[in-house]
Length: 326
Image 1 (tube, rainbow, N blue to C red):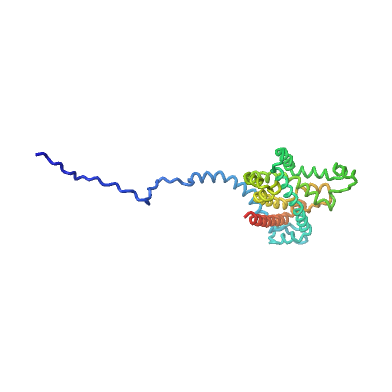
Image 2: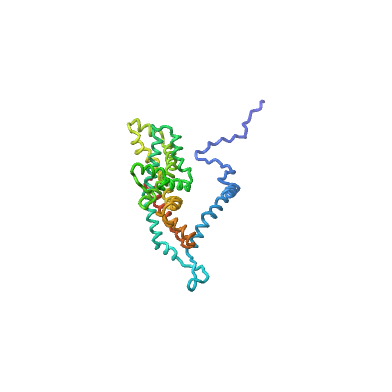
């Protein structure tokens, strides 16, 4: 009798389909954003910068603030030994009550009203001309415009002092031959003369900054505007100018801060004319207080006042720029 084949008792378990929302097991070795070694390496490279910044920037400001709250006082009739005494805000009050310091602030305001529109307007006009489709020899023109900025401020002031001085200036001589008598160093023209020096120095630098921003404007937009019939002036005012407002805001911020630091040009010009005194602008007032009158405490107070003015104006420019570029 043939043996019958019996069914195997071992059954194969069916493979279950994977659920749609099944979560794959994660790799236990997850990459870290930054290892401890990387953080220590970054800190090692940043340490020299922060050290120099603290020693060269933060420490002098703190020292000036501390110095401004003290004064050198002598006992008796003033023949005794000078002692350092805490006077609070007395130095600040004396500085703000000084007619020469307040007058310097007034001259600085007039300087800003003349210098900022001339420099910003000239830089913008030159940059737009360089970026226009009809511009030729752009590299040469950029070099010629930037060259005055490459001249150090002291040398530039000396050059213009020579060009302003009657008797030696070829400009004054040419004007006199034409029947025009001008003294660029008198009280009426000394402020525009110093503004001219600053405009000559800084316009080229800002032209390069604005021209670089204009190069980032998409060419497709400009080509579409020309196809629609927009000329160079219309394209500049309606397309280019709105797109470079952030660059203009940065230039405006640095220009405002720089104008409050006006010192080199009037200090050099003061050697050629009596129209510029040793306290002509606030920075010169602080310098005179420190090194001519040997009153470091008042000089420190004046420096802090100038720094606060720069901070307030910088905040105002930033706030105004953020509204226009939003």
